[in-house]
Length: 37
Image 1 (tube, helix red, strand yellow):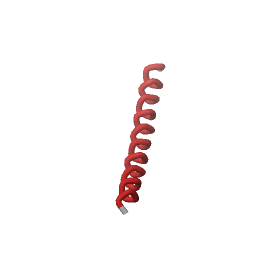
Image 2 (cartoon, one colour):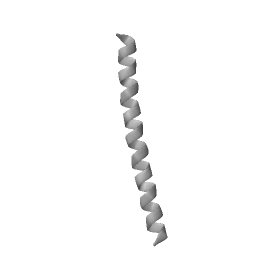
Image 3 (tube, helix red, strand yellow):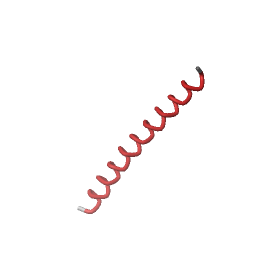
Image 4 (cartoon, helix red, strand yellow):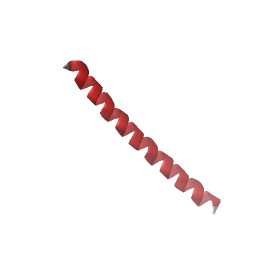
């Protein structure tokens, strides 16, 4: 039972990290496009 809980927490943290990374990438792209103008 415990390994399952750990893996589910790991998956949740991974999905959160991916969401954060995509958010940061989007904001960086917005900054770049603003600078190019």
